[in-house]
Amino acid sequence: MKKFIRMQINGNTMVKKVFIVHGWEAHSQDEWYPWLKKELEKKGFQVEVPQMPNTDGPEIGAWISLIKKKVGKPDAETFFVGHSIGCQAILRYLETLPSGVKVGGAVFVAGWFHLTGLEIEEEKETAKPWLETPVDLANVKKHAKNFVAFFSDDDVFVPISDSRLFKEKLGAKIIIKHKMGHFRVVDGIDKLPEVLNELLNMQNS
Image 1 (cartoon, rainbow, N blue to C red):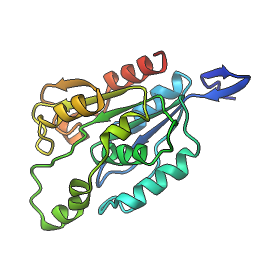
Image 2: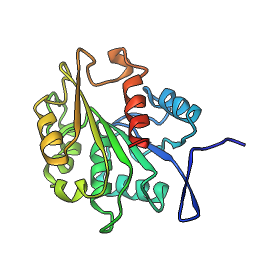
Image 3: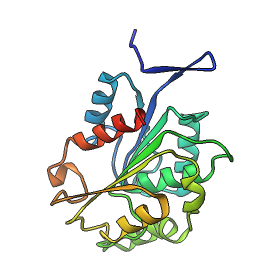
């Protein structure tokens, strides 16, 4: 039987869990998600990479609903990793949590509040609700102990200026990488050791 990292709090055993939310037009088995899942499991985490609905045309409500279903009752030993629109989904999920509920933290990879490089009209229509529906970041900040956000200086979709919003509004630790694109396999990225390290640091904070 797998031995998960556990903590005793008031006599109850709590398992450290990580939920990885994939990006737009991606799959749970794509990109660096399987690698990160495997590495975290080696460290004793319980990890899930849910297959999000209608990934070619992601909708806010449907994605938040699935995250809620998968997470169940979140606690301080619950952590999140998001990629691109997965970061948006995590933020919007955290925004819905009841007062006083706080998770361990979230790592955002190529997260955004603005998008560039969308050329197809269908893509613009899909992105519009995510771009135009406000997120109460002050409320989001209350629901997590730690935030870390990764950006690349040559991401064609995410303006580097969005890093300031993550820092100023969420108090996130910002890590800017050189020439890693949108952190996809097509950009040469199939592993993200720094993301793993940041999660390990979070679970000890």
